Image (cartoon, rainbow, N blue to C red; front, side):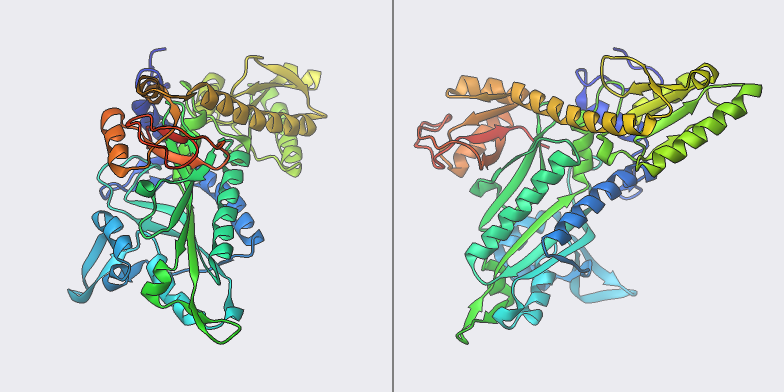
Length: 480
């Protein structure tokens, strides 16, 4: 398929070019004026709003409260937790001058907020009665990335970050895994991305964490995308910021803390999991317009058709369907069809005088082989609600099938290298960082996670033949 004025580079030809063209042609995002920044356009931001609203509700349902903390963090705060500052040092953006003079202490634009929130936790927690402390904030963060890609890795991006304090390890670990489950369900149920939940290897852990967990999705080029992470921080930050409480016996103990986050990179995941050579494909639950109606009529018939379209749109809206009427007179129906395909709208309805006379509309789905089908106007809301549910389920199953067909259980190095060239490999691994580095150097693949549901299995490392460190297979793949 060759690219034309309305189309994009085929995925099979150059997936990176396809992605860069889709995000701009579908009117999701533009590059910002400062290095590595992005401007999220209204259509793209609406996708984020729909995701954000669902996730925010789930966060609140689990007992967390939203708060807001400063973007500017004293540099000394980050230095209190040595591993944390070392991990983030290359990505920090630092303010050294303000108000026309040099600052006494540089201020860091938050790359994440463990340190400033830790400072506040130390003030707010004094007794076991104050625990658990369950906080979340919706914010932007800044990380000075060397290689940027819109939505996936930018200098500034939007996210939520949860931060909690607990009386003991068991309660903190329960929180860490509870939020991992929330991220898995949001990814599957809203984004139709069948992520794999698992634990990161030590070499892939968040800086300052005792354990890091992740949900990993496979994109249509076979690469992995880390779609959300949760961290058990132990007492590392509690020691650094003196987050302690008096237990019921009156003795002081350090809190066990967690942090977890999901960001606008999941929007990039939606694009790369479902999109095709015609452009964007949106799951109905995240589509700004679930149904677009294109009236097709001229002259004396135009007003009657438009009136019927508006009446239908009102009924669809009452039924809870996000509907948009494209009645732009200066554009042809064909142009509109191509544009809404590019922008990933799940369902399109066409209504002309003949359709109106027959009491029907023509339904075209963004994906599927059935072509256009006539649906009754009287029962259109019920028909479309069912069709949207079916389309959401179809996209999830399509992504599951793709992932499974591109994931291989490997026992030899030859099998491993072949698998990670096009997808993922399940392999036994010794756990040594130097072995991970060798694998990455030779194949560009990294350990994505140790899947939580993987079966127990003993054996030797696929690379070096040393004993397996994890008692189960590790998921490897190239990643964004």
